[in-house]
Amino acid sequence: MKLAILSRSPRIYSTQRLKTAAQERGHSVRVLDTLRFSIDLAGDEPDLQYRGKQLSHYDAVLPRIGASITFYGMAVVRQFEQMDVYTPNTSNGIANSRDKLRAIQILSRHNIGIPATTFVRDRADVLPAIERVGGSPVVIKLLEGTQGIGVILAPDVKVAEAVIETLQSTRQNVLIQRFVAESKGQDIRAFVVGDRVVAAMRRKASGDEFRSNLHRGGTSEVVHLDPEFERVAVQSAQIMGLRVAGVDMLESEDGPLVMEVNSSPGLEGIETATDLDIAGAIVDYIANQVAFPELDIRQRLTVSTGYGVAELQVGQKSDLVGKAIGDTGLRERDITVLTLTRGTTVIPNPRGVRELEVDDRLLCFGRLESMRDLVPERKRRRARPKIKPLPHDD
Image (cartoon, rainbow, N blue to C red; front, side, top):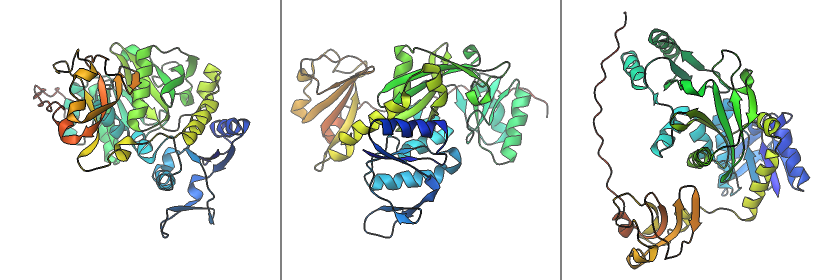
């Protein structure tokens, strides 16, 4: 395999480890500066120039793109995608994870636990927003912050209001989140590669600091995740569109709450804490995908008008509950079940005798009109009770 690592810092730990791991496995690898690419859109085929010369062929590219060059980095990754070069983290996946608001919107839509969060711009909406997330103290986050920068704990409403007003006056976008006190200044970083968590560590804040980032003096220790935390970590990464990701979670009374999904997670802290070869796991995964790539079946299986792919969920009131797949009548309606997902278990090409349970998800290919009839109606939104504004001094 010929692998390109996109990085502006060829000498940092993560880049060096990835390069070494690829070389030890007999792969050809080169570290390329993301900003030295020129995107060539003039020809008949998509192309890239690197340092003024046409880029040679690569089997795969691994993006390690810093927050400061996200826009240009995504454009370069997108061009590699147009050239059919495999990447574990797509340009869309990077875009989803880099925008904190966008990431939380996507995760919340897929029933992933997150801290109660609001996003407002008008000063009059700040106090009701704080009340909706549970009142003070609250965490205020800049949308563009990284490594704990731009994350502020406001102990009371007046401080929160002042901080938000100040940040908004400088045209900064901020999120307001519930402070999860029971996490006690610590979180879990789960490192996802493909469809599994290859390593996990618990990060603890130093002293009175509530941010657990290692860059802010936090400490780390190896942790063995229970199945629920593993499930949430893997699903969060895949929902974002990432196959290599660091998923940060809080241990709350309600289970795992996802704070962030990082598309370029550092290796030094977690390899040191766990003593595992995570760089090697990443390289092995990429090599396997180059040898036997995943296909986007939603695009590849739409072979004629009226046919396509859809995911059907078996609801509590569904007629499918308790029936064997062969007795559901799906085949007679020109619908083929490709995979059955039950919890974290994926069953490809399930047998017709397998009985369906509540919350099973069926990935099906067939006549779209027939599958549309099986999709439950959208739930109507119920109006929330109005929140009285908190009293405050003008």
